Image 1 (cartoon, rainbow, N blue to C red):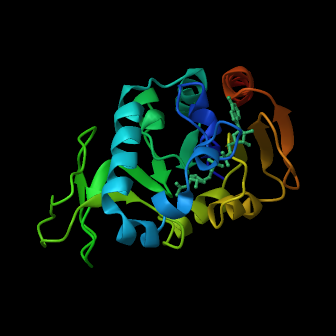
Image 2 (image 1 turned 60 degrees about the vertical axis):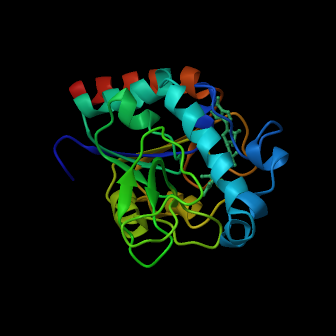
Length: 232
Ligand code: OAD
């Protein structure tokens, strides 16, 4: 165990909801409004790449304008007392913009593009749109660096290793329905302190204390408590 203690934060779209970015499965969630088959699958991309690009171009522009909220900022503050790894399913950059320095994006990032061929080189595009006809160095069409259904999740082994060696695990704003990312919660040590913050949860994973409520209300006091514990 490290002298500073290690915390892993597992976050999902509910964390960015109070920054004005939509979730996926709540009543106003993206997958209640749009078809994930059309917008988040290799089949949808093959059928209508221009529709897929337009969807992510809009989300990229919106995410770029959003500001980190009090929960993102509290999570960044944890680094003053702990070794912290954030494993996020979110494709926005709000953790980094709040000050977190060690963030693994298991579902990719809106701010990057990549080609559609075998080369996996990523290009930082920030808020720029990707247009049909825009190609990577290898000559294939650029696409968002987002993990679509049926594609391989990124950084999973590293993420699992971090969860398994954490003294505390905080899960926030995810319905834990999308695997394999959702399964990370089960890799925590049985003696690790575990908390889950959410507005609504069908099933609380074993060993987790449920802190029901908004991330901006529940995360900052928890962070303050954990920092006080570490200081004493
Ligand atoms: P979901 O929409 O499935 O779940 C969001 C969760 O956040 C729900 O449990 C809500 O109750 C909770 N929530 C909403 N607002 C909140 C708030 N203000 N404070 C705290 N909790 C709140 O979204 P994810 O679990 O993130 O994948 O979805 C997982 C993946 O499904 C996404 O990464 C995305 C999607 O398909 C890809 O795009 C690859």
